[in-house]
Amino acid sequence: MSAMWTEYGETKLPETVVSDWYSVEKWKLCYGSLLRPVNGMQLWKTHTNVVVMPPPDRIMPGRPKNNDIIREPTEALPSQVLSAREKVQMTCSNSQQVGHNIRSCKREVVPKPPKKPQGRPRKKQKIMTEEE
Ligand SMILES: [Zn+2]
Image 1 (cartoon, rainbow, N blue to C red):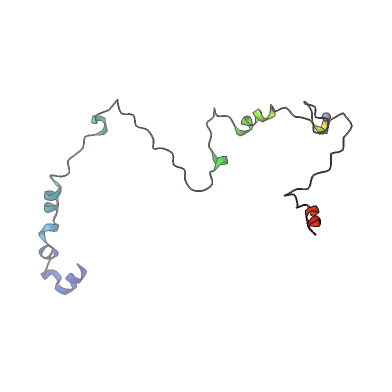
Image 2 (cartoon, rainbow, N blue to C red):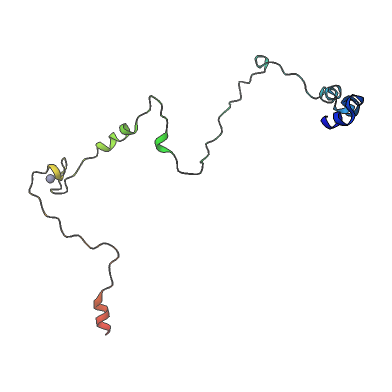
């Protein structure tokens, strides 16, 4: 438009250059038969036999945010869930009695047996000496 204005000024108007097919009248003719007005939402038909359900849950990539779960007010807190753990009976590792642990044990402290070496047991050296 600017280039046209500097070239021709008022002698040539854009309406005379642009094709008639870009006019609003032609646009209305094109879409008048395709686009029909829609009734308001209150006039829509309702279905009672169709139950709309949410889409199934997708497991998204990455670590799940367990601690960020927003819980319902009636839902049990994680600390309340752990209360079942408290019901586990403790056994004393000193006297092997149920109902107390080694910290509150009244019996004399029995020394623990020496620990076995960790890991895969090493090959016996005897076999090597027998072959030699
Ligand atoms: Zn004990």
